[in-house]
Figure (cartoon, helix red, strand yellow):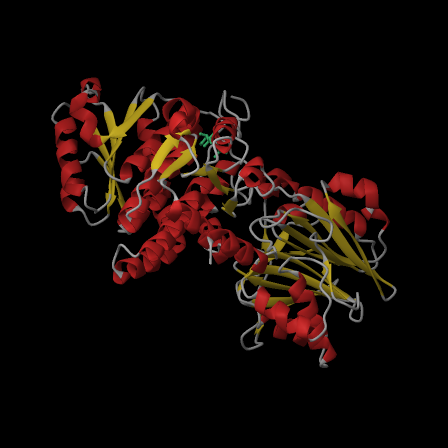
Length: 627
Ligand code: AGP
C-alpha cells in the first residue's frame, strides 16, 4: 500500500477525538438553592486551566437541561445564559481539547440517546473505540467524536438492563480502560451526583446544605474549604447533605473525613503551590502519564514520514530546541536515524538552500505559535518539504501547517518557563524514537523491550525524584543565590540537560550562565574558571561517565566548585564533588527527563531566594509570536 493510501486509511480510523489532560469538571447539589449561578462561578474559577468550550447540565422537575458551546465561558454565557438554567442539581465542564477541533458537539456535558442523563469527563478512555462499536451495534446514536460520549451511552445501556443509577454507573466504570474523573446526573434519580476517579483528580466539597465536586478546589473554595479527595478506583454518591464513597472493585464503603484547606482562591488555582511554576513542576508525573497515551495511528504516521525522509531536521526554539537536541541522540542510538536539531531562527540561513521534497521537518513547539518556527516552516513548505509537528496546543498554527502532528497533552502551562512541557516533549519524542526503531529494525528486540519498559517507569520515577530532591535543591539555592555566574556541563545526551538547566536558571534567576558539551572545556571555556567558580555537572551512570569524570577533575584542578547531579550510588563522583544531588539510574536515553528536575527546582528556588517572580520573569513572554 503506497504511503498516501496508507495515510488516508489510517487517519479515517481515528477521526474520533479524545478529551484528556486538563479539562475542568464541577458539580453542585443543594437543598433547594438554584445551582446555575454557583456552577457558572465554578467554571470561571477553572478558567486558568485553559479551555476552548464550556457547558452545563441541570435537572428540574424531571427534565434535563443542557447548554454548551465552543468559546470562552463568558461568550458562551452571553449566547446561552447559563444562569437561567433551573434546578438544584447540576454538573459543568470546561474542555481543553487535545484531539480534534473544539466544537459545540464535542463540548461537554454529553448525554445519552434518551436525554435522561448527562456526563462530564476529564482524562482519556483508551478503549472507547471498542465500546463505541459495541454500543453502535446496540443502536445507540452518537452525535460527537469524543471518547466521553461512550460513558453516557454505556450508562444508558446498563440502566435499560435494570438496576439503579449507582450500579449502572459502577458497571460502566468497570468497562473503562484509561484515566478519568467523571461526574454524572440522571433525571430519574435527581437527588444525587455520581463521581468516579482513575488517575485524574476529583474532589468533593462539603458545604452546609450543599455539596460540590470539582477537578480542583479552586472551583468551590469560595463556597467551602472542606474537601474530600477521591482516590483511584473509587466512586462517590453525592447528595445535598451527604457523600458516600465506594471501592469500584468490590463495592466496599470507604470512610473518609474532609480536610480543611486554608487556601485563598488564588492559591487554590495553584493547588496550594505558591507559584504556577512550582505547581507545574510537580504536575509532571501526571502530565508524563498523559503523554504516554498517544494515539498509535498518529505515532505510526509520523514514523512513516520520518523513515522515508532523506534529510530530517528537528526544528525548535529555546527549551523545545533542547528537547530536539536530546531527541537526536534517541533517534540515532535507537533507530540509527541521523537527524539535525536546528534552532529555528538559524534554519533558513543555515540549511534553507538544501531543502527539497525529500526533506522532512519535525517542528517541536509547546505553543505551536513561535514565530521563528512558523516562518522557517513556511520557507520549507514552499520547497515541498514534509512538515510534522509536536505541540501542546490543539488548533495552534503548527497543527494547521503540519501534515501530521502529535500532542503533548501536558495541559496549559501558565509559568513562562517551560517545565512540564519540556519533559512531555521528551517522552513523546522517546515514543517516536522507539516506534522508528521497531520499523527500521536496526537494534535488537531486547534493547527495544528494555527501553519500552524503562519508558513506562518514568512517571513514577519522576514523582519519587521530585519528592527526594526538593529539599536538597532548596538548600543549593540558598547556598548559591549570591553567585554571579554558573557553568553547566554534560556529555552525550546530558549535553541537552545541561543546556536546559542553564536556560532555566538564567531565565528565572537572571544569573549569567554558560552551558556546553564538557569535552569543549579545553577548547576555550575553561579560561573562565576562577577559584570558586560554581560548575554544575550532569553525570548519570551512562557511557559518558568516565569521560566526564576527567572533565570534572580538570575544572576542579583550576579551583572550580563542583556541583554534580549524578547517580545516587556513585561514591567516586560524590567524593570529588563539593555538592551532590543523587538520582536514580534510568535508561541513558531517558535521563534528560529525570535529570532536568533538580535544575527546574534550582531555577525556581533561586528566583524565590532572590525575591523574583518565578511565574513572570522579566523581558520574557510565554509564546514568542514575533520574529
Ligand atoms: C523556555 O523556558 C522559554 N519559555 C522559551 O525558551 C520557550 O521554550 C521558547 O520560546 C519556545 O517556545 P515554544 O515551545 O512554544 O515554541
